[in-house]
Length: 236
Image (cartoon, rainbow, N blue to C red; front, side, top):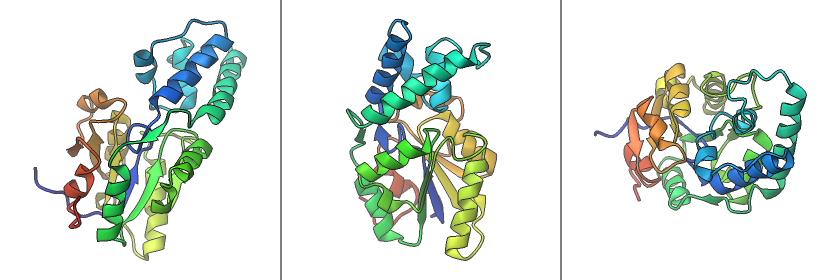
């Protein structure tokens, strides 16, 4: 597969793309279920619920996958406990995927004019806290979460907002086709597609099987593939 044209803006998903947060998310879900008097779920099951934001993760775990519960007070109780627990335990086992920092450094060194950002469905405050903790924030001009806008991915609103902000910083209008969304799920690929941007799917993430439902423009089997796919000269 030939390299992609070098972009002006690269937007990264967080969970399953930059970091492996599976264990902390699963532990937080099971702590919530225990609090509610429900049995724990296997990690593999909970992992399949990740990607659509905290609210949907909790709804799926408590058995309300379509969000049609008539007891919203119960759902709110569950979500509040989950967020409070995860806020404390979000860094117990979470780590940055091997090669991520090197790939970001490579992109920055070869093309310091390329802007990079994070767009995740995770709530914005833990997203920023995690990136700060792992010294990832220095690479990104912006970090938006699932509660930053009126709609989450795959709605393109957040990605469009990042394109607009990046255009102001650069001083000219960035076209969607000059933007690349990098993520590990069909949600990320559909976000790019809905915006007119290009996409890279990460097969090392939390839900790589979902990429079969929305094939990306390119596949990355490790972070070191990102600079190569993006035609960055300073490859690892």
